[in-house]
Image 1 (cartoon, rainbow, N blue to C red):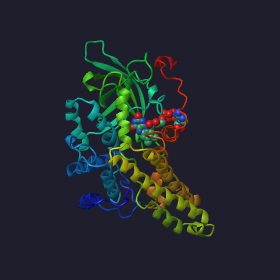
Image 2: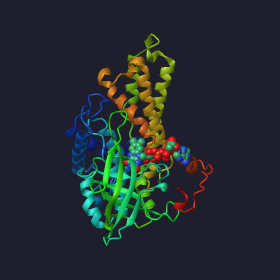
Image 3: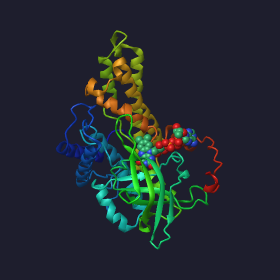
Image 4: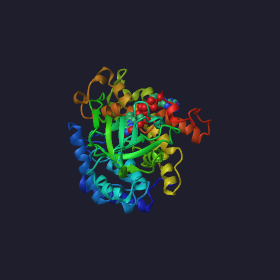
Length: 411
Ligand SMILES: Cc1cc2nc3c(=O)[nH]c(=O)nc-3n(C[C@H](O)[C@H](O)[C@H](O)COP(=O)(O)OP(=O)(O)OC[C@H]3O[C@@H](n4cnc5c(N)ncnc54)[C@H](O)[C@@H]3O)c2cc1C
């Protein structure tokens, strides 16, 4: 493939640059972190406004079909926009789950009336969606979901949902959520699941934010106690909830994964130059230069892998393992960078960025956040299993629950 922009891509990049220059503030430093001192609600509000602006300008959902309000653009255009956006001080994307996963699954599995009602407000950032999949006993293996949905027996055309979800990103602020439930425990685990969407303010929904080490509470426990959901809010057929979930998860994969913060290796080089290690600039130490070289090579390798994956997508092919491998390497690289930066500070590394200065905000945010990236959307181990089985052709994991009714798997 050609790693330079094609003429069309170059034109698109110019369009993005011009729009961003007119609508956002360029970062003062490449490692600037948006929203310091703002609470989560204020950051979310800023993210809503930014998403609204992008939607009006045609950058709100670049790869969505035009019929749904998107641009009908290519994944490469999406990546170009994100690269350019990375140079600007703009809110983090609170809508990646809404727009990257949930709403694309509504395109396929919701009725025209539901799409008509919900797609526009989500695209403009007016309504936030969350995804209620994981439970205390069902994360890597969502086939073990226990949250029940049972037909109402009181004449109402709907269902009652009971159960608990966990790790639900932004549930405390979300307007709606898709929920994976068990409707038939008598069949094998993936066959008895059904998807719905619920209004997060419905009676019977209670949300408990989980406080993280950073002090933030990005995700939540969600308890559902006799939550009524009309049958019109069912997504897909009864018993086909796994198919709906797979549509969302596939879209997550197609939403490209993250873009590395711009110039991360250069930021690391500056830190090493300025830090003292064994009585001299850390950059003079071979071991430190080796860590810098690893960071540079990983960042370059990721970029090339991403290009390869996007080329496949652009040709209408399924991407190979590139995007999965990118997730493993990208999250690990960001975590290594944060650890290295903190190691360089010696005992001062225990101080917070308020005391160390604004250059440390990015390190701090990656130090707290990168571990979660290695879990969300499939843990490192699960992604490696997939690569092993699907790419390297290694023997599949033993699955002795295959064909066994769900109610025989749980005590
Ligand atoms: C930042 C963040 C945001 C999230 N947002 C959401 C959200 O919005 N909605 C939602 O539903 N969920 C969300 N999650 C949950 C996430 O999807 C799960 O945490 C993830 O799938 C792992 O599940 P688990 O935590 O139950 O771990 P488990 O599945 O219990 O795994 C525990 C450990 O065992 C390992 N393991 C499990 N099975 C295997 C195997 N077969 N082979 C080898 N090792 C294995 C895992 O790798 C892991 O190390 C989020 C998580 C994070 C960190």
